[in-house]
Length: 298
Image 1 (cartoon, rainbow, N blue to C red):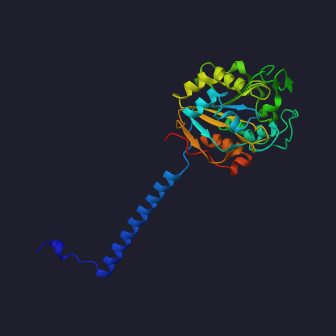
Image 2 (cartoon, rainbow, N blue to C red):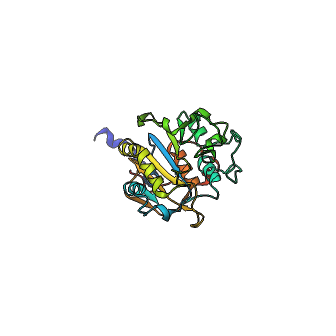
């Protein structure tokens, strides 16, 4: 008889325990893998664009812009990108909303009065990007000169430029609109573009702002569609007649064409999403906000 036949067999109970242990181990492994796969599939998918440009308009409710014949270009971006149909501002008047969108907190600002430059050292989108080795800039129509902290100048108003309120945001990252790069690949990681008091629809019509958007950002929008970049258009507040429901449109290669989300989002959610895109901390109320999901290409 072969030598192997003389090897002792483990007792039946031991063999059974061994089999049960193996089955349990395999079962736990399979369950863990299944849970991991399930969690991964369910995890909110937020892209990491090469560039994001945020444009902020003024004082119009959702129904004044979306579906309006006065805003054909904005609506074309919504058709080719994503439309957030339940997007809301935080408060009134304008300025506190800009601080909320930029830093996750109104920073005690309650009106549209000019602030003292650098009055706050709280974290904000720009300071977080810079700390993470990313780049940031703002392009401000009507700004008297590069880095100017002037309160007002012609149709320019500091109240729409919250970055000047933070001492941890270098003033030399605030540019005139004319400095917006023609080579879009040279744009910073994230930038804000702020029209003047006419072109932002505050003092002038929806059509004026929509035409301005097409004339100044269509080139970037077209480029973003094939260069892993994002254009995000939103408003500071509504016209005080619509519960502060505002238009918010996203367009670019990461965005699902024709996507529509009825999830309720606000300025803090927008900030949080921008921070999540680059693995940044979440400033202020963005920490308890939610990422924008369901509109991104896989």
